[in-house]
Length: 142
Image (cartoon, rainbow, N blue to C red; front, side):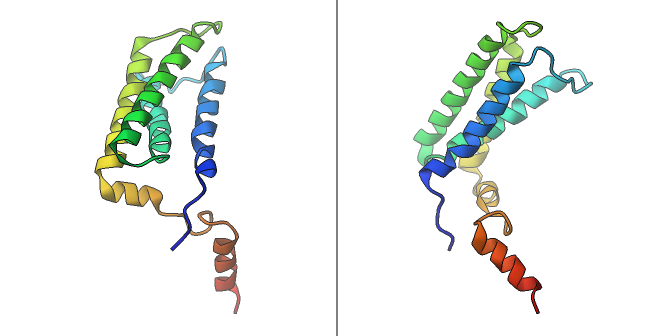
């Protein structure tokens, strides 16, 4: 059985995704998906990912509620932040897509065991550092 990553390491991906969201929000122009409402799909997906990553930091329903509330609050502050960026605007519909994406992701992660197990399964080559890479190299050797 693989050792669980340290609590500090588990914060890396939520921080990276939040940083990417802020970087994209700070740009005066963002590429369009080319379809009506496509930006709402992007909001739904990226905030769902962020909520899942935050939900993984704890266990139980309290962690799930905290993940949802933190992600919804982050989405609200991000929309507010966009109001100060020339060429950007604040939309309630964007925030609603953020909240809905976070809610669906948290419910899926906490209630659907097989989905959660699939998400938590390490990728052999990337999952556990040197040990996994050594295992791949050893397989190729005669």
